[in-house]
Image 1 (cartoon, rainbow, N blue to C red):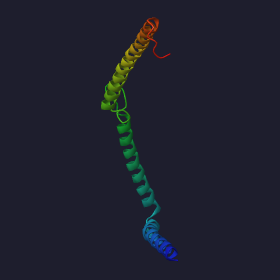
Image 2: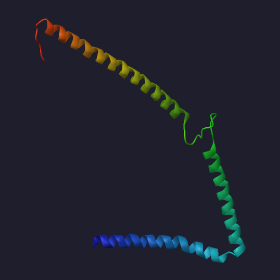
Image 3: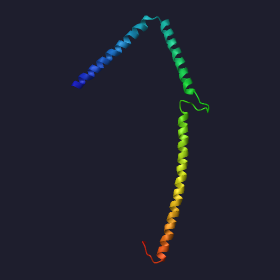
Image 4: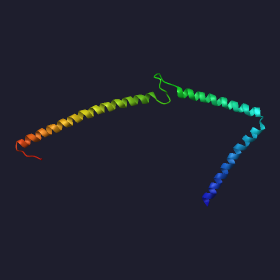
Length: 124
């Protein structure tokens, strides 16, 4: 029951706020002559056009490489390039380690065969 009262109270307050904002606008629009309303709308459209042009210039800005600044930061590109270099180095190191492991396995097999041939037995 308390929830219902709270919801009704919130709805009532919201309705009052909407009416408080909408009614003065409507009465103001009725009071103005049609020419004034059109002029006000034209002014708003001109301001919106100016703002959109400004936003377009900001979004269309490019760096010396022709990359849009809003989408790609130079520092991010540098970090990505350094990360790629590190990955290449790590890949090369892993290849070297893999080769060493293969050589070690081969050496272990040679030693195992030598011990067996000497009659040392060892694990099978």
